[in-house]
Length: 199
Ligand code: GRF
View 1 (cartoon, rainbow, N blue to C red):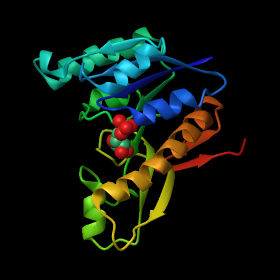
View 2 (cartoon, rainbow, N blue to C red; view 1 turned 45 degrees about the vertical axis):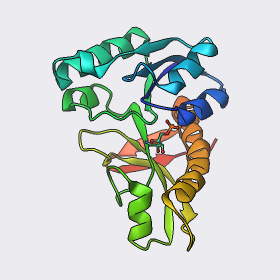
View 3 (cartoon, rainbow, N blue to C red; view 1 turned 60 degrees about the horizontal axis):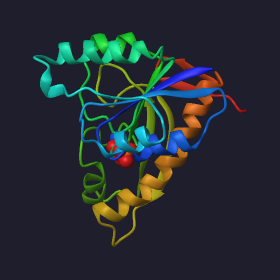
View 4 (tube, protein in one colour; view 1 turned 60 degrees about the vertical axis):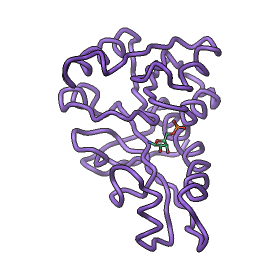
């Protein structure tokens, strides 16, 4: 059984998709949020999943917060750390500790549009395709090895809201599929290139 710890900051719809996928061989050991009022935390607690609120504002430095976060993750014996809308920049020591076993989902077709407001920026840039990326986390924000991507069309009348809703449907499909592949040990990383072997 592989223990998965999911980190969130908000509504947690990707966390829900991963929980609801009920991946054989995987146990959602805990959901941790840096925001005690994150809606996703209540959702997980209602389902009997261990939840932890670690308010980053209570820590004197980014390093101190990341150390507490790592202690919480390790106390659940995590094989895989899943960032699902976790809105904190992580220290290099933290990303190194979970190298090759920490995933993130980013709402753009990386390497385009790292950072925030990805959908609005894709619309303004005139992109015909937008999408999402699941990648392994490294010290450089939104730059780690890409595990999987999904693309959707950008329509003429799209707004940030309509495009993000279309991408979110793909996020909820893509992320559980990559987590499942990790749990089944079907993922290989070589430099920036990731291959996922068939089931
Ligand atoms: C998603 O769009 C994800 O790609 C981004 O933050 C959002 C989180 O949404 N990293 P949710 O909390 O999973 O609903």
